Length: 258
Image (cartoon, rainbow, N blue to C red; front, side, top):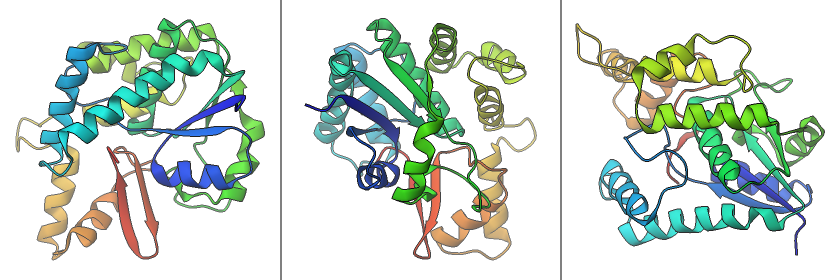
């Protein structure tokens, strides 16, 4: 049995971690935890079904409900089993997608009284500009990051529970306060939250920042989804707010649910 459980976001990062030589079992988490009202912390069976409906509708029916529900059930089952490992290592990026996911997972681990965890958040890497996330790193580069991990603290878990609650309830007042915090236990959270607040429809156009950038791309002559995506992503300040967006083999991959 593996003695270390590695949890990360994004199938590209997870696949490269498996090739990195870092010992342990790799597990990739999927969900968009900053979107839609939900119950904070670990969902019950009703919450899982509600989350399934949201994700199926959010992908335009591109994912089968049975597949989504099974994926979610497997994820929370894995967290329940995390205490069986000698160590849990959390690999996440500084972006909104990962930070909201990290806080949710920490909240769930806290409720399971799992304290044997270490955190590794990579917000930059030498020679990679612009740096957006772990999915840009080769297996060898990921292995070089492993010594940077640090033990999870109680303050980080308590703080993560607060963040997960704010996202789950879509509590704008709480999110606005979080966005201007200084020196929090998870230092990447305020910037991620601030970027999420920019997605709220503005009073003049009714659009969020990503929608504005996409429309600007179309007006500038971009016609294909890949070109529009590339244009909009270039308008962002790294890391990309929506999660793992990497340019690989001349095409763009947006890692959201899968």
